View 1 (tube, rainbow, N blue to C red):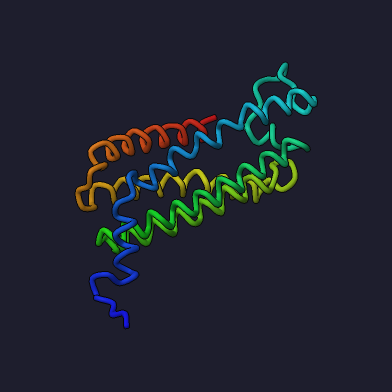
View 2: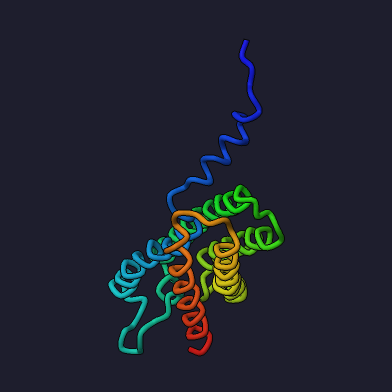
Length: 191
């Protein structure tokens, strides 16, 4: 006969595992953008090679490079992979913050912002600008602005959570990431 003690319950084991993740999961989300941008040159090269982008007219936007086949397929697939990975990280971070005892409104707002930002990434990739411009722009709005709001809420939660080993460098790295992301979104809006 096996008797389970309350200290070794399944919920406590899960909490213990999420509390001791070596790095902050939302930091993975911020660094995952590098995965997305490593495929930019590939899409650009395919667009230039098959002649769907003319470099003599100027440097094209990312959406223009992903308008025609086959680069539109690459663009959609990359955005879908990033959307699923980002959603996974958003849920892990939500649970991690909850396990640290911070199950307040900011944590609930963060998962909602993260969820809609992930939907925006998928909309952005699957609806090309030349085909369905309104939905493409809605996806860009959700991905960039709600994603930026998600990063700022995560920054707030970083300094509100219990002290941890990695917080000494995660906080300043997240501040730099949030400021740079904000400046880039402002720059995108001005262009």
